[in-house]
Length: 426
Image 1 (cartoon, rainbow, N blue to C red):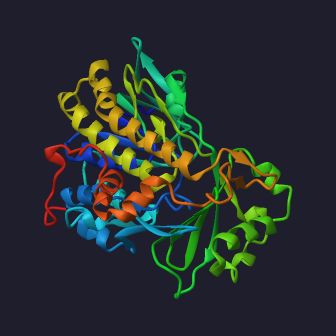
Image 2 (cartoon, rainbow, N blue to C red):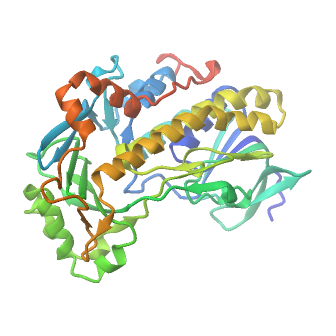
Image 3 (cartoon, helix red, strand yellow):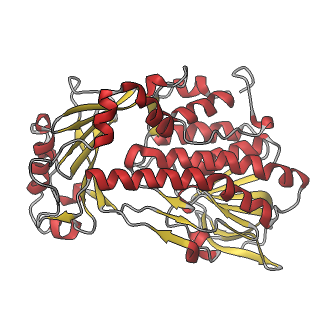
C-alpha cells in the first residue's frame, strides 16, 4: 500500500457521462472531487453516442455549448422507424422548444474529453486514469473512501466524505457496498450484436432503425462507417455462432437490402461483439457513505438510447443534493443520499416501463433455430406497426409526448447555481 494518504471530498468511481458530469458540477461548486477511471483513455467503440436535448441544454447552462459545437456530430430532428408497412416518425423533436429541439449524435469519447478538459480548469477537480477501485475504506459502519490500484500496480487509499458509484451496470462499488442484493431484474427478450460497416457518402444520415417481424437493426452514423446494432433472441448467440457468419449477413440484408454491397466486410464472428441487454434497478441506491447513480443504479435497454440521458440527469440531481453537506465538509447523511433515489425513482421506473412495453410490442416472445426472433402473431400481422405508432401517424401532434420523454425526460434536473457559466466564463 502506498504510504501517501490522499483525501478528497467526493470520490467518483467511473469516468463515463454520469461520473464526468457529476465531477465537473461539484468541482465548480468548490468541492474536492477525484474521478477514478480504470481505462487509459476514453477511446472505446460501441458506446452510446446520443446527446439528448436535456444534455444539450445542460451543456449550454454550463457554458460549454460552443465547445460541443466544435465536436463532429449529426443533428437528429426526427427518428425514422422503418417497418414492413412503412416509415414512422417517432419521436418528432421539432415539436420541442428551440434551441433544444433535436438530438445530436457525437462520439462519446469526444464528449468525455470535453468534460475532462472543462474539469481540469477547476482547481478542485482531479481525474485519475488507469485507476481501478479494488476495495472500500470503512470507518464506524460507513464507507469512508476507496482503495484503488494505479497504472503501475501500486495500491492507494483515498479517504472521501462520500463515494459515488458511476462504474456501470456491473459496478464493483455496488457489489463491495453490499447493494447488489437490492437489485431487481425485469428481464429482456433480446441481446444485441455490435459490428460495423463502411458508410457510403450516398447513404442516409443520422439514425436508421429497421424492424420486421421481431428482427431489428439500428445503424448509427459515425461519419465514414456505420455502427450497427442487430437484435437477437436473449441467450441465442452461442447457438447462432455455431453457424457460418453468413447467417448474420443474410439477416442484415433481409432488413436493409442496400447494405448488400458491404456485408462481406464481416469476415468472421470475431468482428462481432455481443451486448447482454438488461433492464434492472436497485430498490436502494445507497449505503452509509456511498451512492449509486446511472447504470450502477439502473441498467436500461438500448431502446431509444435513453440510458445515457437518465444517467446524466441522475448526476445533475446528485450534484444539487450533495452540494450543501459537501460544502460544509461533512459526510452526507443516509437521509440525504436517499433523496437522490426518491428524486430519480419515478423517471427511472416510468422509462423502464416504456422500454418493456416497446419490447413486448415489437419483439415476439418465441424464437427460431437460427437465433433470430420468430413472430408469435399470425403472419398477416408480422411486422405491422403497434397501435400507438399508427395513432401517431394519424395524429402527428401526439408526437410531442414521445419527443419530450426521449429528449428531455420526465423531470427537469437543474444543476447547482454555482456550476453555471456563461460562454465567456467557460
